Image 1: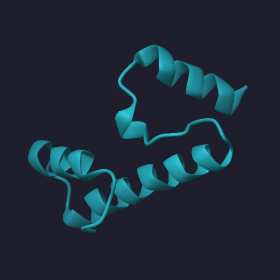
Image 2 (image 1 turned 180 degrees about the vertical axis):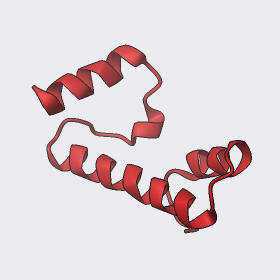
Image 3 (image 1 turned 60 degrees about the horizontal axis):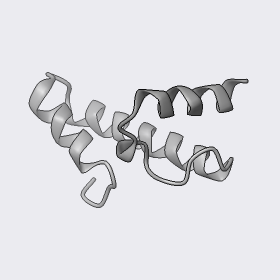
Length: 66
């Protein structure tokens, strides 16, 4: 999994967890899928990794679930 928008997340998982490479790749693919789905629903316009504000994350959650 070399060409991902979530390289920082992947690297963090590698350095800070004991997860296997397969599990790390599964997590990264999962977050990529969530990002794609949220973009398709027009709830977000950028990657989740770019969101730094908790208030913005809560707003995304509210838009998705409610």
